[in-house]
Image (cartoon, rainbow, N blue to C red; front, side, top):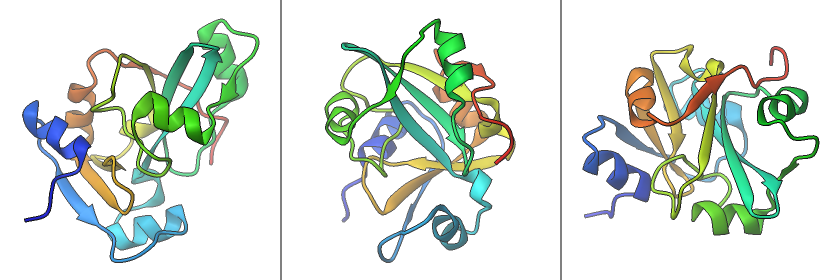
Length: 159
């Protein structure tokens, strides 16, 4: 039996319905990932970690190829400077490698911001904590699983 990815374990423990999809090989693009999953690119939710201060981070969930608006994010957080977290910071803060990051099963508390684009489809996919495997979840279940998340418009225009 294959061990469940950490995000799937977390969702199962919290009675959140979901299913897993395992890619048969390396994934090189968002378009490839979406095609293999039978989804539209905007159904893929990316979890991006930003450094707010030396010791403070925030994760932004955003759909598809949209980019986070630095202006919107700085304004929302009341910060004049932000930076994307390094690969090492991502692993340390989330416990996951880039490409597998999710807002669940984190080693400690983390502020989560969710762009409204995430809920445009009835079903989305998010990182599982393991590269090459994704969690497919209904948007309403994702919202229910993130009760402390802050919703807003964090995208830089249309993708």
